[in-house]
Length: 253
Image (cartoon, rainbow, N blue to C red; front, side, top):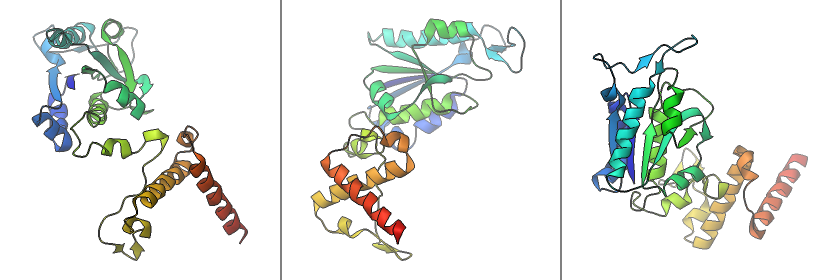
């Protein structure tokens, strides 16, 4: 997986993507990252890339020409390899990022992230260059760097070899629209709280069933919007019915 990030703050992106799992993945050649400074394409001696918005209003807007040239420079790197790419603009107007979108993006050869700042980017540059618009959520950030880093991290985890245990990605939250089950490690008892006995039993089938049940309960209680999308089998329905019956009896007591 090859990433190209277009930004005004190169160090912010490099520092985050050089640590932990992402840093090791880059060293191993499993992912690559090229960070391009949009200011390098400024059309003035002061390297300014912003100006006042037409029509008035607060703040500044990133100019079309330097953004366009930076995008084309990124695309040229991909064209030189005869590969495909998707250029993503990080913006609240984009589709909300999900694990499903991460899986979709992981199939691409190259991902180019355009990080805006100030009041945004001149719409003409976006019309010419943006292939996709993605939002990290319904809130406003100072710039697109943090969303880009989050998406790069989420996508990289799906690249074979990035995680030490490749099955980890399929066991985590949002797989099958469920949240991940509770995790425990040593010691067996902490502050009077014990690890569930089933996890100490060594009975793999029972452990897997327990984990599935816990995922269902956690999703139902904490993310009912996700739970509506979960595909339930007979064992799932039986467990949930028993759980509801038990809760009803406790309520009556």
